[in-house]
Structures are given as structure tokens and as C-alpha cells.
Length: 239
Image 1 (cartoon, rainbow, N blue to C red):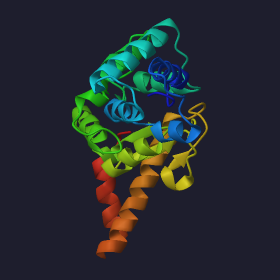
Image 2: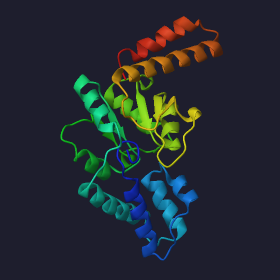
Image 3: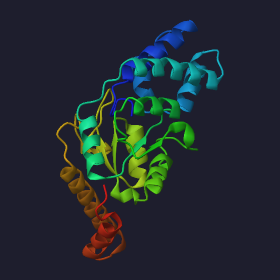
Image 4: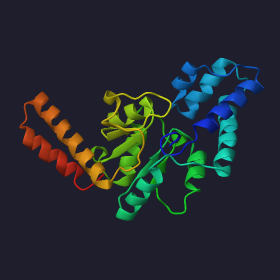
């Protein structure tokens, strides 16, 4: 969500800076900031506590949430192409999920800015036992949508998020935003979602399914076409 479809990274940076300053601590280094990209709120709160923030982990989460939410409700910019793609999915009746390591209250704040219900479901970081890079958030999203993970495409801006999605079996699109993403991190790496069509998403699912089937066939000695057909039956007509 943050940095992938909405441009909220600067809100997080401001909240972090204020939190550290309030406790007499220096700003994060560039290396520390990059290491935080895609972190869950639980991991982030523990990180700030180790740096010397004299608050309980939940107090840190509450502080960050309140600061970021105030900024979101004041002004929210969407990343290029995100709203357009969500609108196309909604118009086509294709289910989708907002899967984020952020808390539910922040996810709801983002959703509340929309004029239409563009997200079918929301899976937030404080609603799962294991946040990204664990695959649980994506597996839960696929289960609630009633589709196979292999028929889903995950859009992420962080290596943690992409690791979670690929471990769940999803096709992946990486949109670098502060953290460098290489070709091996995602099935497709692009600067924005601008101009991406539903047909292209369908082709990506097909391409990933075909590659997976071929790899499986090679590993097991199974006929490649048989494996490919089985993968297609799992993901037929779904994105």
C-alpha cells in the first residue's frame, strides 16, 4: 500500500523523524530507512525501541498511526496508474485485495478516500499472525477471495512484499519506490502501473503459470503440457 499504490512514504518519514526527535535521537540513516521499507508495524516498533525510544511497542504503533493517519486524511496522492487500474478491475468485476503490513486503521483511512468501493477485501498487518515477508497475508487474501494464489498478481514496492507474494505462489509486479528492485525480485519490474491493461495482467498470469508448470515438469519428469494444463485449470479466468 504505502509507496506501491499511494504516495505516503513522506508521511512515514515525518512520523519517524518526530518520534526520534521527541526522544533525543538522531534521524535514521539512509541504510536504516531502506531496511525499514516494507516492515510490519510490530517490527518497526521493536526497531525504534532498540534505538532508544522510551515507549512500549504499542505506544510507538499508536504514535505512528495517529501521525500518518492525520496526513492521509488531510491529503493523499495516488501513485501513477493505481486508481485507473483499480477502476478497470472494479468495472470488469475482477476481485482484488488490499494486502498491507500497515495496520487496519491506516488501511481503512486510505480506503475512505475513495469515491467507490474499489477494493473487494482488505488484509492488514495487525490482522495476521505473520506479516510480510511471510506468505500468510497473501494466502489469506486468496482464500477470502475464493481464488488460487497462482491466479493472483501481487503489486509490491519492497523486497519483503515480493518475497511474501512469491512464497504464496502469486505472480508479482515490482514497482521500485525508494528500494532498488532487480529482475529476479519480481516477474515484472516497472516504474509505475500507468498504462498497464487487464489483458497484460492476464498474460502475466499465463506466462508465470507456464513457467511454473515447465519447472515442475522438469523437476518431476512430468509431461510439460500436462503440468501446464493443470496450472491453467487452477487459474482459469482469474487475475
